[in-house]
Length: 445
Image (cartoon, rainbow, N blue to C red; front, side):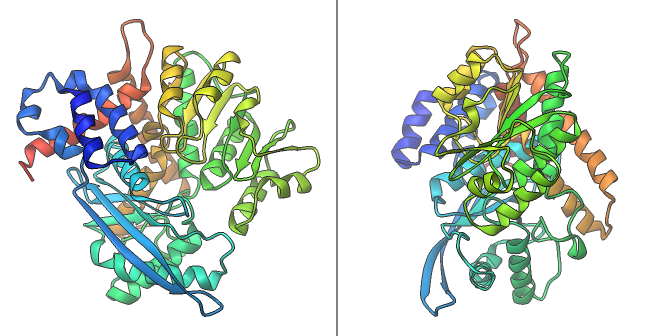
């Protein structure tokens, strides 16, 4: 495999899709050695097939606001790969959504889902619609208009969407209700549902919980644990909330959260009612950090800045892609942290990732660290299929097992001769080999 040649051709076909190209490049660099050990992959043009989505659906979403004004947004579903199971991946409603971001997320999702050991392919979707400042009625009408087109392409054995940025419990409810109305079917077509109507326990917390289970195992390989350690994290939504909750339960002190307006530093620790307040902020659709600073006077608000400038033992990206860049990585490395992990998808830029690995920093990528969210979605699909509802303890036990398995796979494929575990390489190879073998078995399709 000639990575440079493949990337040149991909850039020619998809110019300007920087996030997608970045994600593909990272995986190809990681897997090229193992790929070249399998000449049958080359004969089948496996990479050329793997890096292109199987299907992209694009559609308009017209809807009417509370004043009677008509708006038109774009809707997308990128069905990237179905080699190991039905398409599975979230829906993102945010003004920044474009095809490049959704293709990158769908590509990453393919390998993340493979790591979970569950039978799920990779997909992603969403719209450039922003829930910020919109009423419940407006959000409902948009979700119904969005589903009026999407429902043609999804199903419990075809494609199972979930939530992502801008798509929480409220939006999932509206989307599911619209699907049920349109199809006359009640099935597990969407995950992240409410407990009363087919949802799984601990699903809202699962991404953050699973991330901390993974981080704990990483640290244990160096005879470290989280108790008594400080944690700087970004974000304020479900992912950050789950991460803050579990980190606190494990004895750590969370000292930062962030939003579009800047970040909060709270030396006393973000726990208890402060973590609960994060959920209020998320559902408000307003700026995050200034209200937090007003509510808890002991905290400090740093407008327009990122939390990576604070000293901590553990750093966790929990907001969005490429939120931690090369300069941020240099600041973090100068403080000699114990661990850095992406809880958001591709939370670090390529430059930052390279810096952490070159410094032999204990560091892991999003496709491994944050797989607990989609894993629990897979467990929700299982519960829907067998018409049973598991307890929180049962779901948490399965989540522990899955995150332990992902960590083992990363160590198996990522351990280098000097003993350093390159979790990026390990996660990419483990996910790639499972998908590649499935694709080879199913022929040229």
